[in-house]
Length: 405
Image 1 (cartoon, rainbow, N blue to C red):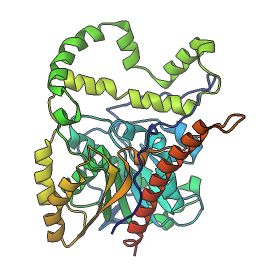
Image 2 (image 1 turned 45 degrees about the vertical axis):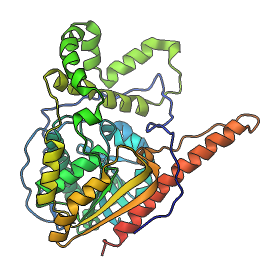
Image 3 (image 1 turned 60 degrees about the vertical axis):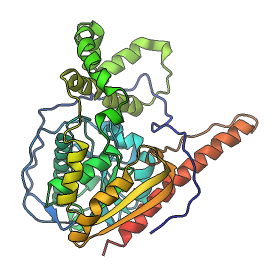
Image 4 (image 1 turned 90 degrees about the vertical axis):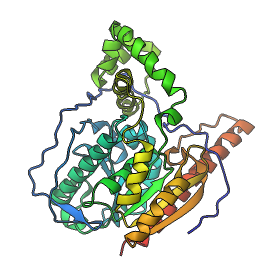
């Protein structure tokens, strides 16, 4: 499978260009490490990559609870700790897609990947966005997303999605696929290597990355000891205590106090998403202060696990033309013998774009009274970037279509 597209390099930020309302009421947005999801409906599962009845299974670790009510304005529906974007028409979806975003931005995928997931929904997929908090312990994060997605899926298969006028009977027996980007791609491949049941029928792995901490964070060896010395002094300041416990209500209070400094048209969704994004940093910094020097499992341990235990039969590897941190080729060589052994298929495609192509947004460019060369350049860059993301969405849709029967 190949795609012939001209190279382009997106300069768009993964965050949308929006503005916020000073007077808007914001929800409290806090991570709760002690939250456990509970559902009273009989457990449902999917087997062999299809939704259906099965055993519930058990999970280790404590998932984190996030209030995602602020995302309802863009058509996404909160289901337990996940967000679900149904197809725009009230018809039976083609399939269910689990979506895992990259490090940090994966906690607010409804913002950072909004354009791509909307394109997938328009292709007829029901997309489940699974948030997770960044940690050096990738195994914990992997188990978290596995539990979160399956809990959400249980609810969908028992109760349907009433807000989208989708009955449970329309979702049962749909194929289940998975899309992961960057760190989300790593967690996606880890899930397929640690678990042997309740796995998707196919994985689409985008911009895979499995670098060591030293490679992922330049000068990390010096950064860790420095943080160990600096954090106790920082924690003693009043500002740190306030920032580490900042909630949506606190942000609203600060924005109200700012008065004329903050524009009237600031979007509360953006402010709430920024709070969820920033809320991960104290946790990561605390891990560094405690002496964490490497991801767990290590990259070498991951590769060994992938070689021996990867269990998803059909895998599409997607790399982009300009992506210096991509390790898709290494993953291909790692998975090839295992996929052959389980009678599966492994395909790789290179598309035009860069590491942030899946995060490209569709900002509105306001042209002035006269159309200038600056307007032409800005609109041209936007068009090229969005074209790459559209090509990505179409590639995924076409590949999944071959596996829907």
